[in-house]
Image 1 (cartoon, rainbow over the protein chains, first blue to last red):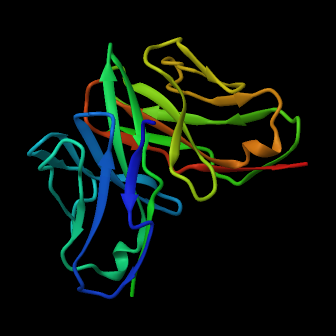
Image 2: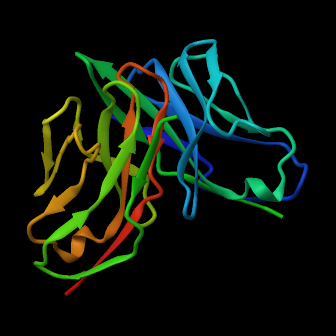
Length: 114
Length: 112
């Protein structure tokens, strides 16, 4: 079954304590992305990756890091979390074939930073 | 820059009512347009898409037509069900590009 998995699904942490949210896809997609979802703002792209070792900033990259050492994994790293990073986070991978794209989303990670 | 505007919710309808959720966009060139649906506690799922002007995307009774002249991609369904209760997101991407722009989302409640 084609899927994107994220872990953990729920996380409560304190300001300044480094954390990593993992993301993995089993569809051999080159393109992966991280979004955050906040009420009234929809989804905003944090970072994206076009392939292994190739990443770039999205619209709201401040306070986040990513890495892409393997095609299937795209972890999101918060080096020093702050309360304004409390949000719902989604990882996604995308296929682009024959001029058409399809984006697959993970189940989400709800993060609370105290 | 590129942007997507969709009608504010929540939208509350009775079962079997007609649904329209408005979506307009601003973009240069010819973006691809999408509707995603998010059920409670889940991630987004692609509902339908259209890649060029006058295309109609359809799925599960939902339809949307890519109208370049009005820069719109309104979502419609002729008869909603309670199970359609969810948040609906309109989105665009520049074909082959790496950024997807989402609208703020519209929450739909369908009453039995």
